[in-house]
Image 1 (spheres, protein in one colour):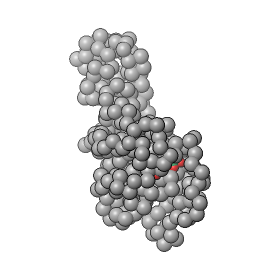
Image 2: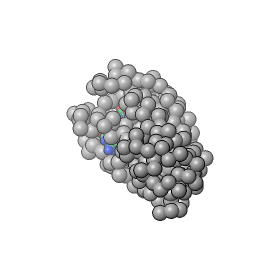
Image 3: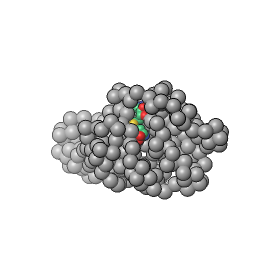
Image 4: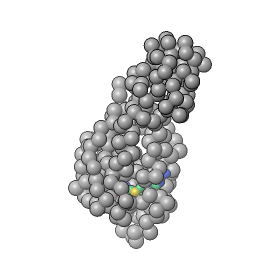
Amino acid sequence: MGHLPRLKKSFGQHLLLASGILERIVEYAELTSEDMIVEIGPGTGNLTVQILKKNPQKVFLLEADPEMVAYLENRFSEEIKEKRLIVYLADAKCFDYEVISAKEFKILGNLPYNQASLIVERVIFFFTKVPLAIFMVQKEVAERWQSRESWLSFFIQTFFDIEYLMTVPPRFFFPRPKVHSAVIKLKRKQKKEMIAPLEDYKNFLIRLFTQKRKALKHKMGEEILQKANIPPQTRAEELTLEKVWELYQLWQKNN
Ligand code: SAH
């Protein structure tokens, strides 16, 4: 299998060693032999092995560390690579998922903690292709995404329901991280009608949540707020998902 690459802090490399937990992550994804899978940050391929056991049609690995990519190329047989495994040296923060030759694919990944938000943000831009994702992230990050306190939590929850599946303590990793981890499921909501480029919606959310304690009337015209039936003193964090969406539709028409 070759030597284990030196584990690098800069890539957030904490390998998940417990096979019981790896198996559960794969169970949560309810894989079938029809499925196309993208795995983000496969590292040495421990999760990949469990995914392959379910015989999915194809597995695409996105790994940013060239040493890990070399290790993965070695770990899996020519036969598997010919039939169903493709390894990309890629940065998941800016990967073009259109490259994946499948209409839809599920995403799995034990994400590097310091980059999890940017990686998930990127995934959201391709929501029409992703019916389901299972991610491991820092526990606090999972909780923040589930709350409605940041532009990113609204961005994610506009398109996906987030379910907290389980907490994983540091002892199951090598090297041990300083924080607890959480496995979460993103399940795509009924298709949203998205007319404008998603970048536009993202910018709108950032605008709402910058200085989030400031009343909304300082951020957009009072007529728009009135049309949406929102009192001008309201703050972004007080809005429901539905209201934010409604406000966005009105905002878009006026801009
Ligand atoms: N899935 C493995 C390793 C998780 S550690 C396991 O559970 O054991 C996180 C992995 O993500 C590392 O392999 C790291 O090299 C990789 N990684 C870090 N930044 C990345 C990025 N921007 N894009 C893709 N992979 C990345």
